[in-house]
Image (cartoon, rainbow, N blue to C red; front, side, top):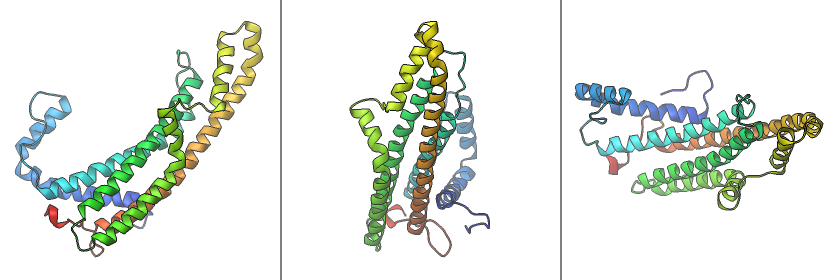
Length: 256
């Protein structure tokens, strides 16, 4: 697989190569098990009783490719979720319901840090899989050195971000002063007397927009750095997992 003239991120290129390899693994299976594959697909799509997997034992190489493919998908999906949250924060679609703007904003801020933690763990776990897969190869030491360096980069880049999440899980909910202040203002506007509500309503609107803008900018800035980090991971993984001359997947001897 050669790069097209249109720029493609390093992670996207890596994901494309893994996906193509997955296709090459699946095609012969579908060819030799056409009827079973059709029935399995039908059962899965329509939630029917019956087999949901093809009754065969996958080869070691198939398991290897599947593990790389699933891990790549999990990481990609996690990063896309983090990107989605920037959009969610910028819009409040539940006017006229019991959901408040502040609770909606807090929900997405908390989930953002939760997903940052998940991304870190999945990246580190994926890199560990790569190291173990090539542990018996002649260039195992070189690969381990590259992966360890990349793992350190991932941990270092995400450490300050996920520290907030770790505190959130183990000690208290994420409660920055700005969200706490918005909670109180929102309560005064919704539950106070008419005079109090009117007095704080305009200030609340201004404060809410300011806080929402700050969190959206924070999320977008973080995501930009995460994109750079993922591209670095993609570049190193392509170098390790694929032959340079033809971009075909390297298969360690233990999986052949």
